[in-house]
Image 1 (cartoon, helix red, strand yellow):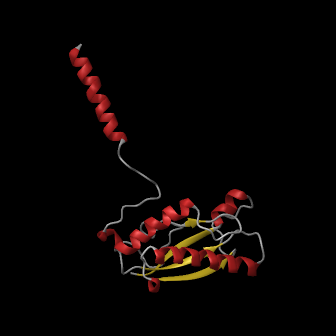
Image 2 (image 1 turned 90 degrees about the vertical axis):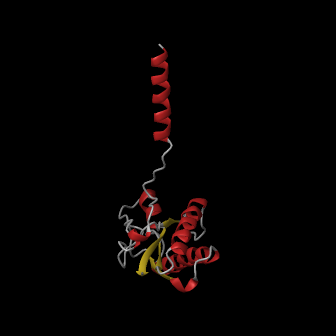
Image 3 (image 1 turned 30 degrees about the horizontal axis):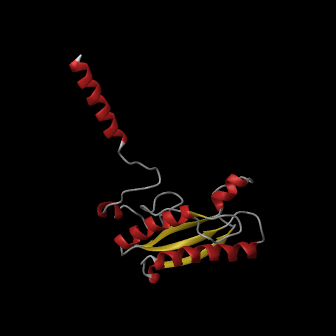
Amino acid sequence: MKRNIINIFLSIALLSMIGCGTSSKNKKNTTTADINQIQLNADSDSNEAGALETVYFPFNSSDLRTAAQTSLEANADFLKKFRSLKVQIEGHCDERGSVQYNLALGEKRAQSIKDYLVASGVEPNRITTISFGKERPISLNHDEVAWSKNRRGNFVVIAK
C-alpha cells in the first residue's frame, strides 16, 4: 500500500515536471551557432529568419495590437542580440482597396513596425522598409481568414 502511494506520488511529480516545459511553434531559441544558418533573404513568413516573427494588422489600419507588440518585443530582443543583422520590413495588405491606397497603407504598416523597434532600442540604420500593398499575398483565398493573413509586416534578412 505504502509503495503504491509512493509510486503514484512519483508519477504525478514526473508528469508535472514534463508539463512544465515550454514549447511554441512560433518561438525559436536561436543561438549564435544558429545565426550562421540564417540565409540572406530569409523571411519571417517562411519561418526561416531566425526568431523574427511576422506581425499582423487589423483591417484598414497600421495600429499595432497587443499580439503584434508582443511579437515585436521578441523581434527587438533578437535584433539587439544579433547586432550584425539588418532587416527589411515589408508592409502588406489584403486585396481590398485600390493599388495606391494599399501601397500607402503597407508603407504605414512597415513604418509603424520600424518605429516600434527603434523605440525598443534597435538602431534605425539596420532597418529598411518597403510596401508591396496587395501585390504579394500569402493566402490567395477571398475571405476574412485569408485577408487577415495578408495584412502583415514580414521581416527579411538583408545583411548578416
